[in-house]
Image (tube, rainbow, N blue to C red; front, side):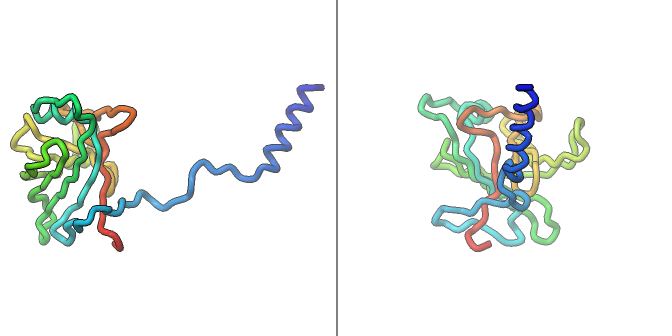
Length: 172
């Protein structure tokens, strides 16, 4: 009898509580708005601008630079340029806190498939320098996941991930 009353009580509570909502309703993933004073490059010659904060150790290892003890994260901004007429990748500029006095620049390319996923879109910086190149899996138009040198996902920590998000200028 106690079990029946408990079941009826819980059921009544659930019925009167209203609909359950797990998260706010939003349209598809949207870009973040640039908060820096300097406007971002834009136009048909820009594929996109992506920001992220990644663990320092993984990037230092990839770029073969010494890891400073005080370095816990690296702020990154990658600007990917494209040919305005053909929309093919051309060059990139990478700004980061690991080496503030030098902007990293080079070529990038789009790879349309991997051995394990024929639908994957991979962005590869410096494809002609595999020892220090960076690769990203394009999750959608606004999110990039940094991959390791073997093409696997990098695993972040409790504070930072290897995810970069598209940023846009205010008012766009």
